[in-house]
Image (cartoon, rainbow, N blue to C red; front, side):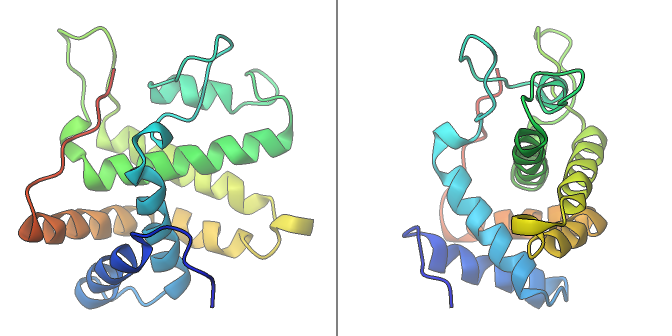
Length: 180
């Protein structure tokens, strides 16, 4: 058994398991464990926008994140960096799509474009698929998990929506992330 690394992990493990297994019938302990750890990761606000530009400023737009992840035409310095960025993009898309669907869409009055749910799903599935293709050496054991996350991405978003609903019954609604 893996040691708990975040104080909220046991709580999130239970809530995710209730939604994924109990309500969706998704019986994959690796997926539920991964999603619970993802919630722990994003419980720390500074982890929501980990991707940085050349000046060290957080990148908040999905399209810019995808460009940064490209090792050929973007700013990713290596294929390992591409994998790390793609993993983050998949996590970000899953989290925002499931926990904050109201943050999706385009607001013409705002300067920035908020990705639609469709764009988040496409970027998340594609990113997790790319991560799953890193299936050698130190990444070999994790690759099948990311393949399952890519294949079931929409279902995982639905599961997080159910998590959000369950959390809403226990406490006040969560504040949506500040999308610049």
